[in-house]
Length: 150
Image (tube, rainbow, N blue to C red; front, side, top):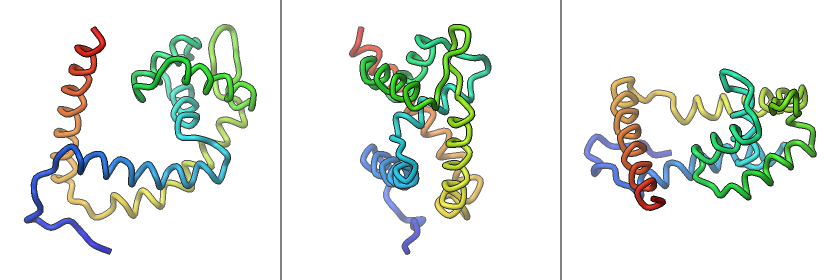
């Protein structure tokens, strides 16, 4: 096991991508054990964590904002979750079913100790600095994407 050195070069886009895919790989391994894809989990979690229940269009827009994925693919994911009865339609809104909530709880419980090992021991000031940098990179990348799509 290696750890980051204080003399490591400054982070760059490749480093960010590699860290993202390494952490995502851990999550996807857990999700695969439950027969769920990354996009399905993100969609189900979005439906579960909203301040208010979302319409299908609202859920689609939120997931598209998170993943920058195409609408057709997200609609297909929503349909898959409905067919598997992990999402339910209630009064024009999509909400997690009991099975969907149980799935989120189970995967969350499995991921928690893995995340604790990944994130554990990183000094709070390093996490705060990383948070500021990631927020700025996200803001700038979203502005560039908006300009490209204009």
